[in-house]
Amino acid sequence: MATDVSICSAALLKLGDFPIATLQEGSQRALLCANIYPPAKLDVLRSHPWNCCVTRVLLPPLVAPPAFSWRYQFAVPGDMLRLMQVGYDGCQLDYQLEANRILANTDSLPVVYVADITEGQFDAKLVHVMTLRMEKDLAYPITKSTSLAEAKDAEYERALKRAKSIDGQENPPEEWNDSPFIQVRGGGPGYGYSGRGI
Image (cartoon, rainbow, N blue to C red; front, side):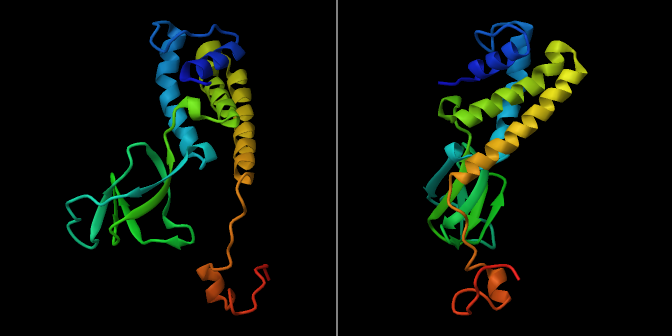
């Protein structure tokens, strides 16, 4: 099971350095990891709706309504990094995201979002991507080599693109038959539109 320490240690080893026992051990490499890892993790998790991070909940409204324009407001889940969907599949609800609130005109709000999960919940491809991200971010501070840092950056970008592609292929393709754009063009159900581009 992956941890922040195991990911950082793997990155350090691949850079020719020594692993760490904890992020608080007091060594220079641990200090670097403690400062670099948390924002790097959030950036990677927000960059894509990773299947292992996607969470869905039904939010209850807060007692106090918004000051105007909307009937209800809902507290954003504490672990939410990126809002993906408000409403049930195929039925998007109108909403407004403001600070740590979601405003809507319904008294129960189904939301799907990317959550800030623990490393133990990462799948293998996400562990690999995070390790390469830490290699990239630690390369120059550890080795002082600009060329190595550039090479690690390129390696990370390739791995990130491939991991996103694999992750996306695990879900069925999106259906666009009811798209409002198709309806405007005279297509969609009942219009004999095939769904193919013209």
